[in-house]
Picture (cartoon, rainbow, N blue to C red):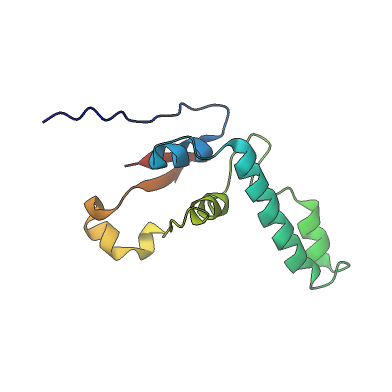
Length: 125
């Protein structure tokens, strides 16, 4: 029996593969690179506050402040933490495959997977 359901697909633009992978997995244009950028900024700011609690004159804080954000690079590649926070905002959970023995045993029971290979995110449904 053939289904008439259409499959939503966003092609790769720049290095926003995390955004496209999440939207492809969720089957709609739910997130933009701007939303992911805002999430990355929020995460970086929260980390900055935690680091500052140890003293803004500490070597650790100064070293941390001298680095670029760990949540997005200049080309638009987002971290797993940004993906997790985006999915959390939709009440969806993420679990590392190594700790998910049920998914490894029977992956057909899962809705999908977001995978990373060489700084490239892809969705598998």
